[in-house]
Image (tube, rainbow, N blue to C red; front, side):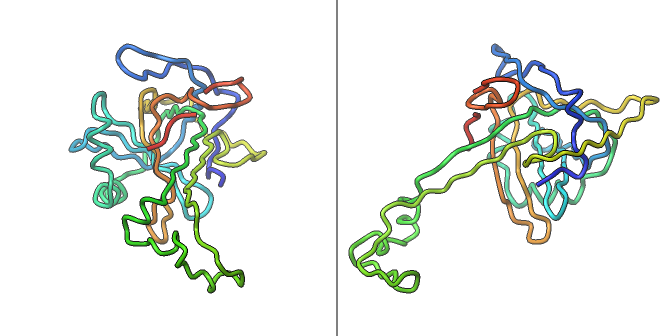
Length: 217
């Protein structure tokens, strides 16, 4: 959907993103100055910024401290999400975030079999509740995910809102190293999307030219 407060595309610039200590790439970096719910998790070593969509969902952008990506990723679960939601406080920040498209797909046939769902893949499958055709079985099960993060949200939009105060300098939060993104629906607390961005320039295409899309985990 659309962000509650879109980024201003006029101040989108190319900036450095540090894949690791030895490698940096130039990425398309969005920027905004506004009020967001944030939380500094000292236990895990990360900064969390929540960007709300219009409606009942938000994107949580999680920036681990240097060298803490695996630690934060392994701890990412219900307990961590509830802690961030409970203790996050709204404050004004100067936020910079890469514009990026995330896409991946998984063959989940073996996953289903591991859960004991096996008969539907065999000649003994009974799919009569779904179709009148007989002698059908499931041959493939694939999960695909796609998320395009840009100034207006995750879809095209035509409105721009700028919320800036030139008389004070807010804390700077820059997502210029590997980070995690979680899209959460508030009413059910369901995780709709979970991804990891290590290099925003892999397989990503935008109006800035042919970039390359990050691998999701």
